[in-house]
View 1 (cartoon, rainbow, N blue to C red):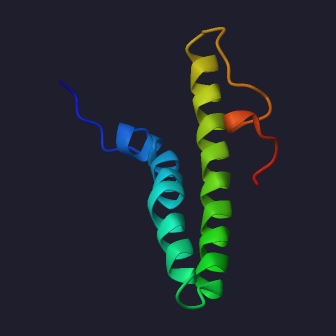
View 2 (view 1 turned 135 degrees about the vertical axis):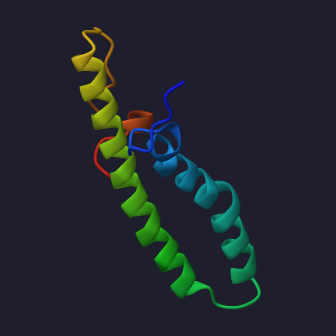
Length: 90
């Protein structure tokens, strides 16, 4: 079995999706809960910036996937509006 260490490996292909899931289900709820005790304005702004960055990466991953599907000759494609039916990067 051939082992690939290229960026097309499964781990790197789904990195943006995993990071965004972590932010949504772990980091944001934790920071918002702490915000009730102390000001978490700066961490929330940082989290917003990081989520915007990874949303862009997610769109890039979707574009790469669409391109690779096209190279394989398949007729399947991703929606033009991007991930989760949203247009733009956030």
